[in-house]
Length: 369
Ligand code: FAD
Ligand code: GLY
Image (tube, rainbow, N blue to C red; front, side, top):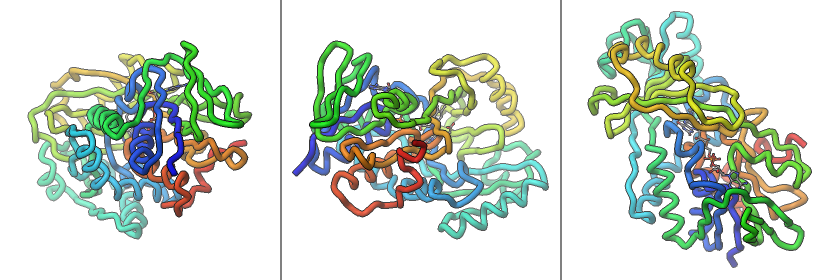
């Protein structure tokens, strides 16, 4: 029989989890302080890029990201079908570009270990590279081409997921201003600022960079903190840039609507989501070294979001051992859009007592306590 699930936070992780749990027969309520998707999820560049983002070693986090990438084709189709809404999902492939001979060894090392995980990864040099992406700076000497890396238009994906949840029967309460965990001993009880209470059998903690709020009430160390990402977008002719372009100083993602998204800073500014001139300038100053035509261009839009970072860079996913009513799905840092399907499946599998898709020990929400 389905359980009553309260999901705290209406970002991509909360909504994806609500979507999966509701369609498996649970009765889900989402509680959102402000607007669904209004924080990190709506600000993201939408890259689904485990190979570009994780270059160092094949750890459990890399495996988690890879599982999620595999789930995406089916998942995004289902979200579109259920919601009746479309959003961009482009299998563009990506180019991880380098400028110096000394960086070639790092590319080769990546290719070797990522290849063992089935990654399609090809190193392209000089003219072969420029044939694939015409506008690249000729200062580059090579790039790793990952044909499987893709991207979604994150703001539209979140909207579709919210609509999909509603269509499935998830009850979404937004603009609650403040929501706190009141008790969980006999059942989960959450209280909103206006005094309304919401109860359920289980709580999913998916309030992103704000997860630390539960530290005192749960008597648990939750080292999740916000890392601001400042980001901007150019208007360019559709098709002028074809692939996600990654360099050591930033990334560029060409969207189907003609915007070229350029991210992103990593700075500590508490919960402040303002952009600074310095933050954006650091991105735009570099861009001429990637795509020389950008020297003449000015971004038409700048914004920022708060990535939910954890002390060790891994998300918190799993049940509290002494309090199985509480499941964590938070701290997805730079990869929450990519990780949304796998997180949703893991939480639903925990509820349904199914075999875990990946081992969860490394992601235990209790590992810091
Ligand atoms: P959020 O989207 O922040 O959602 C948490 C929600 O909880 C918020 O809506 C908040 O209002 C709500 N909330 C907080 N406290 C409470 C409370 N007490 N009660 C009720 N609601 C509460 N990831 C990728 O995979 N690919 C990318 O290309 C990518 N690019 C990024 C670029 C930038 C600039 C940034 C900032 C992030 C990027 N990310 C990317 C990371 C990704 O955006 C995050 O990992 C992901 O959005 C986290 O989702 P979330 O649902 O946990 O958090
Ligand atoms: N994953 C891209 C970012 O967090 O900026």
